[in-house]
Image (cartoon, rainbow, N blue to C red):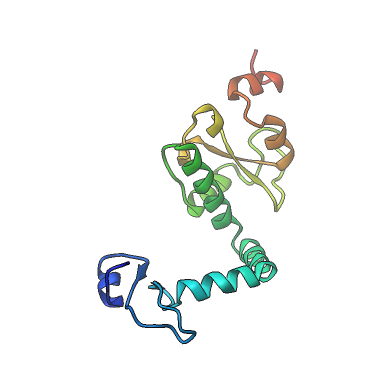
Length: 160
């Protein structure tokens, strides 16, 4: 069983969960979330019963926060691949400004649904840091996929 821990102690320790040993309003004796006081059993039950609502909430948040959502997606993928480095939504916005809102490959104006491309793909051992990122249009990023950046530039006729 989990040790008793008051919420304030959990906050001070930087934890995300705590356990009081007291039942929630629904009678569960389970850990609670520091951020919302929520009983984890109640939260899990709600999540299972509201799959479509959760998806709709997530999609709306992603629409409202596209650059943060992209950074989170890359962070998750990088963690899975054990890639070094990280970047933020501000890094993506800065790279986009530096590229003057143009695709790094074809030079066309970036659409709303632009892609953040890892120059050296994570699948090839590339890092997730800002210096390994560029902004591309969806067509160019799909065409590049996980290809070697030099080989792809040659394919485009940019290198001999």
